[in-house]
Image (tube, helix red, strand yellow):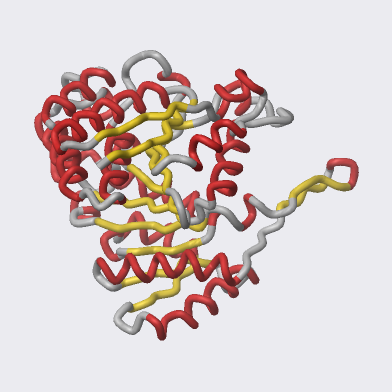
Length: 351
């Protein structure tokens, strides 16, 4: 198979972890007889510094013409620490999601047998956890009208959803549940928010189309609590943009490290694959960042093309590295650790 992949390294540790994902992906391509053409493009703070825009038109054209996008991370302290900055890296991310139509963020959370005791939660609470969040990505409060009034003393951010936006995300949730344990949880705040009541009534109306799926409806605060008490009681969860942003970061630490969790953002025509962690600017250039989440995101990319064996080869290599302790310092637990590049080399060699 010939694949054209847009490569958006971004900021901070993004270029370092992306390099390792490319290295491993190229090893997979060589092993299984594929051809990957990588098309680098600017985004985030790097793009602002270069052309004044966090998601330039040229980058969008490259992404739109590609089979998929592999993305690193964005963000830089000079923007994080300046609330008045007129242009911010995160604006590029939101613009990219909207222009590419990436409406469904797929974030799996699973445990690794060799790391159960490194999680902040007790082994008996997390063993067997294997859940997936589907977060709506292009609507809600992040994209609603926002501004200031009363001389700047009052701020507002409007949360708006249409039934169609809810339906297309819920449809993916139902379809995913059918391939797993046929359990779906709709996460909302329907006791308070009108948008949540729209979410709940829309999903309820869709239940008849998926009679084999058992659907639960839970308030977001209850889910936040249960995620740290009984995470393995969940399978597929669907939710709106803000709630999904918060809950998926909470879920990510169940595995023991944010540096291990991949994700995908799906649209009608293209998909983007990225680690869930940020740009970690303090580690930039130090060769200490964990590249495994980005590498596992590449595994999701291969699987999305129907290349299950290729994805499995990456997952097997990562599991072997964890079992044998060939890991970066965040997972070393006081033992020997290896650099970002060394871990990437080791994984590529295993494949």
